[in-house]
Image 1 (cartoon, rainbow, N blue to C red):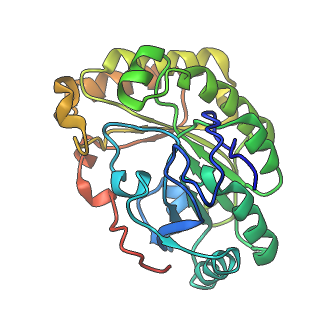
Image 2 (image 1 turned 45 degrees about the vertical axis):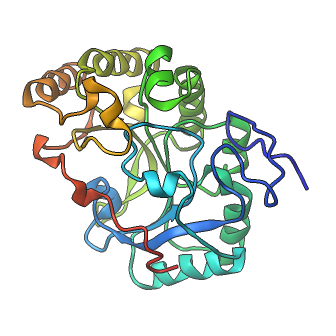
Length: 290
């Protein structure tokens, strides 16, 4: 039994007998079904085959998937069953297999992908808080990286996500993702086949931090190698009520100013409407499709 070091926290849990700091022990899924709320070239018309994994290396106080990320929900599955689920979603016509918060299960996921031998792209949907060694193990398995880039200020990363090292870790992780899959490729139907989409969720009262993130990305990365997805869908959930400054929705003015900066910096990608601040983007983690 090996001590777990898959994520940057390297907690050393002896899984599966022990749960890691992320909450993970055995391979668990909360939902496996077509999902229609990703970026347009990922969801397309048939949906993205989203596999929502249980547990998360981060501790975001505003997490919309908190019941799942805290590993309070989720059904245990075997590697063989995971491969069967992937193939079923492919047969149903999903444009890709979308691995949501997969970090604690990378070795099992690789085994399942070896079994399934998919004919559609595989998406790695992550907070961006990743170890380089774990990402390198995925080289050749992942077609589309879909990371967040949440913060550049360590104090904010600690306050809201319990990860003061997030800025440096996420920056190094994005370097590796771009090395593997930088530059976007599409099929004739406009669906992404390969590439990187960097997400940033604008938080209320944190417009300045969002602007710093955009400037950092602009100055440190080749913008032709990835798309930006600027998100306004924040809704105060989970422990957000404990933090007065984020215990509200985003204002139009906050989001407009961040959007204007993104445009002026020359980013290509996607900009959510301010009306996207709804709970409907969070599905039920009731074991559907598992």
